[in-house]
Image (cartoon, rainbow, N blue to C red):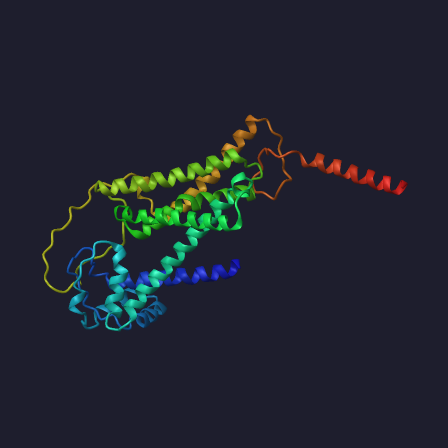
Length: 341
């Protein structure tokens, strides 16, 4: 199953990169975010085949030139205003497939189906995990199967309400993609770091895992909040790919934004795509250090034969050699006793 997921993930990443390259080539010389009345001059039908041809030739500049040479055939209704980069993809779909009935609706249906399926699986999994944490408690043992099912449904409903409440906060948190990746990085990177500690560091203990998890979560939270505050203050946080409005049709008059003369703190300018990796590294490093300090403070003996590891530190586990010797002596004495019988 792991290799099947790897193949599917590779296909998804390739399609995402392909779509991003198409959108960037479409609005390279007419950025809708810089020109409110931006209408591209290019006919975008057949762009996919042209892109494949130009990618085979490994000449992106020639691909852009060919796009500029295509005739103008854009509906006047497409003279729309967009305010966020998240709206580029819907605008591109409407410009390319707007003349074909059913395709824009199919695009919207695909977005909703993907979003609803992801949210439903996440909520159900979260409710099941919370319910599993009640194992061994008197509350869970006293529940019948029917009441347990109702409790899981109630937990899923409550988590759904909390997720819906976040909808009113998302508009103030920047782009949708950056927010989604940043929020998932809060725990995904730290949890992966804890798994690495458990697999490769036999000396890791509860104190180290807890400290590493908190350090990773704190780091990502600090970077995300600091970057948002710096962006709200007009500081330069991200450096997107260069675009222009030289290819826009029509005469427009707009007030140019004041260029940002000051950059934000160097850590705030780290891309949100690196948050998971940074969280994983911090979790592993802090977990190893805290585990070492905790084991040294408790004066524990080293254990080098617990699990295959890359790093060997003093472990809190008992000496397995003594246990193995005792078990061997017991097995020999048992055989001798059975022989005497």
